[in-house]
Image 1 (cartoon, rainbow, N blue to C red):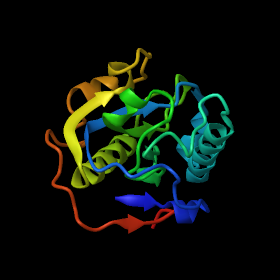
Image 2: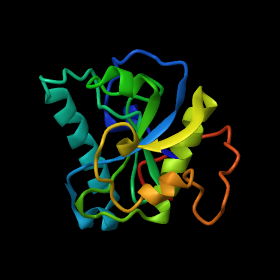
Image 3: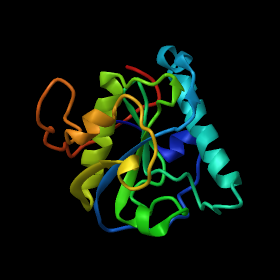
Length: 182
């Protein structure tokens, strides 16, 4: 897993409470336009992730304590740390307590189709969360709250298989942290 940590993002520890277990993981997308320029510049993914967190913290109606997602995944194959293994978004507590949340940085227009690298990073995040108490259930956001999901939803319905293979890989015990490609 190519992990970009909260520390590397310049963020403090999450204020959200720890969560020991869930039924599984829900895969999300931004629900807004995502520039196709992200595909050519990983730093734009980092900037988008920071913007998403800033927007959540500024949302007085929802009163988020942090970014609403446990992790995000970018089209370059990186997993971006959000809440980590803490409770989900503050909006609908019943909906969000049952599943961890992984956001794919694709949108409703512009960049809408997931790359194999993005799918692999989502799979990495799912496996990491499963090592720490997430159940086997893998769903899309629309399975808990009606939305229209972009190109990756059929992949989620198949159980989010690792790209290039039919079964998930065995979770690896080590993590590789990086903000740039080696």
